[in-house]
Length: 194
Image (cartoon, rainbow, N blue to C red; front, side, top):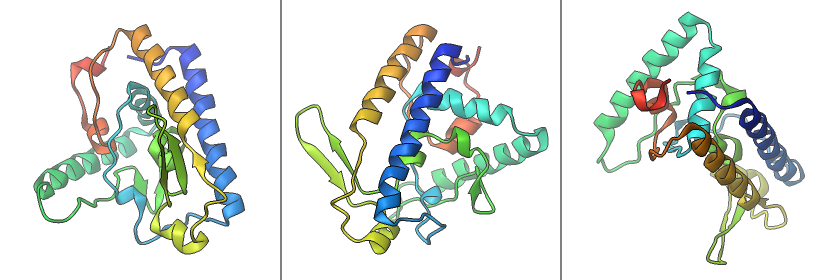
């Protein structure tokens, strides 16, 4: 299963918009993300879109075979460690299998939350309420309560939802998705394959 070319172009532009929106808040806030102790690459994020799944799969396909084998082995280890730690009294914190030497090896193909996380943000919910977040601990430490500069996630989420609907319609895909990056990498279920 592949992203149709016209939707792929839309996805690339949307991800570029996300990167610009992040920079538009980080720059005036004076924020520099540079490997803090609370590394977001160790946070257990779930991803819910077929678009992110297939786009990540595109990136994986570009890796050299030996690198891909190493990433898959690391992802299997992460999935196993996560399962062993679930239900414990502390949150699961394991490094993403795509992080090598402190950098994401599929940075251009990273999912939405990897692009937007850490910055002070707001979201206008469908019920009219506005939800805000102060950013990660490192953002708060560097910038303080930066109410003047909030990343408005609303138009980005709306655009992602629209693109996701178009993709699912084009591919005839109706399954729900709730996966970590490690789970996406190790997933071999036929429902995602050609």
